[in-house]
Length: 295
Image (cartoon, rainbow, N blue to C red):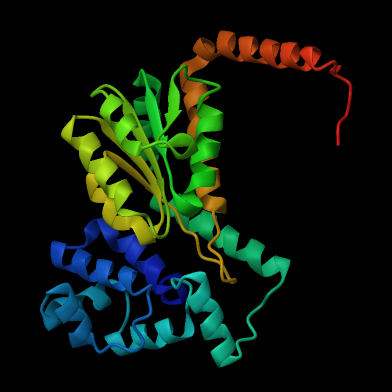
């Protein structure tokens, strides 16, 4: 089967995103807001919601590789991977879906996510993001809801390499306090997956207003934020279950930070050695030896 024809609606939009016209982008945003569930909408209803012509809507679905909107709607009816967990579960129970619920199915989905992510993120985007991180005197990282754990992961890696890496609104503090501290030479990294609060958009807008550069690691659900950042790294998060998968997002963050370490070269050697020495000192303060295994 042709890979294009087997791709889900969100994958096709993601593949075509940078080539879409402004009107088509509005239509893509409408579909995102509907969680990809277009099965109960006529093409002219979607066009009206996006404030585009019926002809634009028709061209949009043709651009995505569908023979017609009818074909796209039929596929959407069979796929609920854009819906939030509660709606995915409701759809599965209503239809009595017997989709593959084995470990193999989830690993296969993640392999597909990683493959599509590799195809979507050009080397130049990764290299530019690396250069921005290396050059930044101070880095701010933010991520809310399900993105919080990935933001913490990004910070945990980068703090080993850079001396000033901060989380916005850490420990429940006000984001406004942190945003007020930002400087034009600082760098903002946003981890933004499904259901981002308006706060994320506001932070990006303010960062742009003061002249800061920014990097966004996201999936198609937050793709509209890409217009507000310097570099966007789009990943795939499809899953056969009711929860999104963040394997591709985690891999991109790991690769990005590892590339930064290589780019900084010997500059990080002294810092890593000092951190390792401090780890051992803290262990000794607690009366633990290096060879002690703890459960």
